[in-house]
Amino acid sequence: MLIFDAHLDLALNGVDWNRDLRCDVAELRAQERSLGMKDAGRCGSTLSFPELLRGEIRICLSTLLARQEREINHSFGWSSPATCYAMAHAHLAWHRAMERAGYLRAIRTKGDLEAHCQACEKKIELTPLGFIQTMEGADPLLVPDTVDEFYEHGLRAIGLTHYGPNRYGGGTMSEAGLALDAVPLLKRISALGMTVDVTHLSDLAFWQLLDLFDGRIHASHQNSRRLAPWQRQFSDEQYKAVIERDGVIGIALDVIMLQPGYVRHVSEVTVTIDRAVENIDIVCQLAGNTQHVGIGSDLDGGYGVEQTPSDLDRISDLQRIPELLRKRGYTDVDIAGIMHGNWRRFFSEVLPA
Image (cartoon, rainbow, N blue to C red):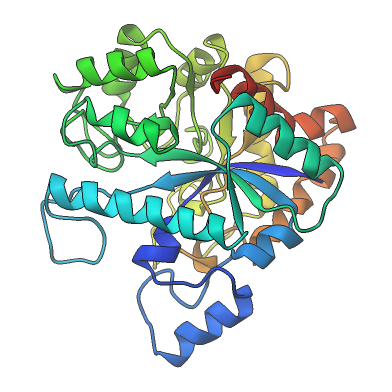
């Protein structure tokens, strides 16, 4: 079944992690093992272009992710706004290179989306992976108006924060609200007609953003606090707020968002893919329908197979989800909406003509 994945860090893998995503997953794993790589996430990749094709993941949101970090004693993040800006452009360049090579197709307009989906429905095997450009954390925006420049480069969705606070507000594992610069940034986002990804906002920043911003919102990869009770996940009230604004919520496959008390590099993984399906069911029960939930896998988002459900070895294993939904009583129409239709509808409303 066709899958629309609302959160993939493709350029992070291609640029920051120096992976050639044209290779098979087995080859990527073998390359890193041969180099003796020991860092978390290495030697355990779950995706590549061949694997995405194998798993029928043919459309996604692909991130520009360049987070500013106060500390420079680790391998993730960048030390200044200028460097974040530069790295976001490196991610843009990687996407353009993959477009030229025929692996990616940029989706910037409603017409692009419709044409790509029609090609997927005809099961044209070599259809490139369609992508909508998103930015995870607004650190690359030197000033609020910088969003206009990235919009010209194809940016159509943006989240203001990632982990910790930044120049625009509080993110995951912080208690800060929105910063002053968020106000003019949200005005520019609204004027451009972009959607705001409310994933990774602190609780306070989440509610402030909903008060300040009247445009479209979505949550690209945002699981339930019922299943993993810490701040990275949403409460029922936050889920309901996104649903009331006609947003869609993507369910992630990172076990830190699925398994209570999971500690990276310490805990044993005990959950399976069905735990993510349970999360899908939570959203559907809160909404009273199946129209506000989809997939936002976040696979290979700075981690690897060591941090996925025990029965997920590669991204193609997402194809197990439809049968698990059937076992819970979901119809084929419901399942098609969850796997791709809800995100397709949402972005057919959000993207410019």
